[in-house]
Image (tube, rainbow, N blue to C red):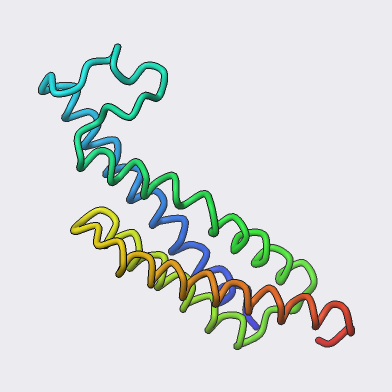
Length: 141
């Protein structure tokens, strides 16, 4: 499998992380400039941001939870030359769930819908890890 195809879902996940970060920066900076939030109220990471800034902040923090396991697995797949079409397809499903979860998180924040996207993504990532572990354990290509 071409390394480009293996890395493409990872690149989209990275871009998603930066996109959410820029949204967070925009809403936080705007809140500070409008005087809705004072530096003293957030200096020690107190949760005193307006709703939109908070949504983006939590969505950004969420990009450093499950995706870390995705990054590690992608790197391991490349190093061990184990990445195949199944890995790439599942990677795209995982990344699609992350994008959809982030969109819900920063828009209507419907917890049930957001949770469903999270759950499907987590299950897909778990399956990806189990396939990798089994293949390595029994030395399959």
